[in-house]
Length: 345
Image 1 (tube, rainbow, N blue to C red):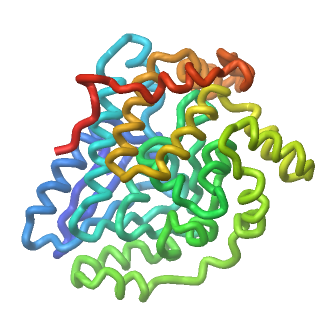
Image 2: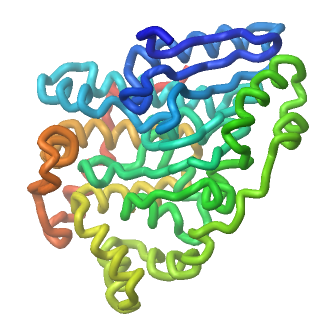
């Protein structure tokens, strides 16, 4: 493969998107977003293309998220590309969600952040044996975006709050159990699925031919605990639940939450509660308001510094205590952007 970040192929009746930044865990760049969207529009209008699939080069990751270092640098320099990236990414996420043709993601390895946005909103979401899903944004002062406020808020067992607040990873079996993935297929069969899709537009029957039993979900075993302890209208209530439970697992969850940005976990939880009552487009508009505020807040830059740049894993959050993050401050993240709102065609 060349240095080109994303390839497009037309194989019979299939349009194929191939992410090609394996050394960077296929992290999503603005140029990739700008290439993918118009190509999908072209395929939507094509009479010969019946379905679209997306896959990634490399064995480690489907897509480990957006190019956070670039977003950090743009934001530090007050470059419009920072929020501009999110605007174009969110518009692409919504386009995938409403795509009129089957959209099949073939995901093996790490899938986080922007990679989730490229996959989870499609009609068919195939997980391979090394599938590893996470929305760890609260650890860098951000929140689960790319439609996370919509799909996480609709997961059973309060799994959305669990994933958002702890940043925990789930495997293919868990994704099938929760519905973030629709089918489990061994990655050795991905290319055979692509070949079959190029020759036949009966997507469901093709995937069924290669589908396997994913096995027991580890999350299912803790789902009732999550349902209980993450049931709260505030982070303070959830923490109280965890302390009251006082088990090895609840204490583990509590320690994970305590490493995150206090501001980020508060806005993340509020966004899930609001998102559960909004449609997809409304969720994306809310996320764009939030991310505009995040890009002007201390914690995002401090989180990226501590976890990605200096890698000392010692972020100095401001405020650094949950009780110091006041409701008025949290509400500012949801304020209207007036003439800068996210608009869909």
